[in-house]
Length: 212
Image (cartoon, rainbow, N blue to C red; front, top):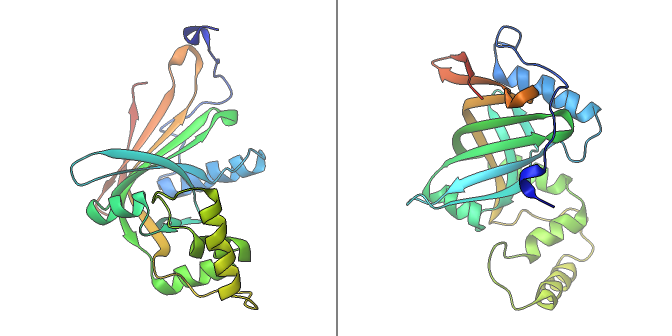
């Protein structure tokens, strides 16, 4: 198989700067509702890109847990690689890729931690096994083997025996990406894709078309 011969033709939809919502959060909500209705796997999965203070980038997939005019929220261990990056350089990019719909959305902005009370409420809404996992895992740090992780998991099960809702780990919580840029991408024929860019201007948004 030759990689250069792998091709898909995009012709499902079009996207016009004259038809998108004036507010990109509204446009995101419209597309997200369509993605959810299409029953694609994990429509809230997004690539999160961060960088160290000296510009070394890294990316991984996380799950969007809330969004609105205040920003886009995800949760993680603050001592993970992404947490360390964001402590040094509180800016990030998000990428939603919905290939079944021939769409993607790119978001860039600054990042802040959400209130501890909001992290606590979300943490206790998670399945108990996920709460245990958050306590057991030193995320992104080297461990000697799977058995070590399972040993820590068993220790947390013992520590919190009888509790259905666990306390919030001190190193775990939510981040909010506050958008400054949105790009909505719709696949088109001949690789002449539609790309609509929103850029923050004061209290509003500037809308432009980008060449593919």
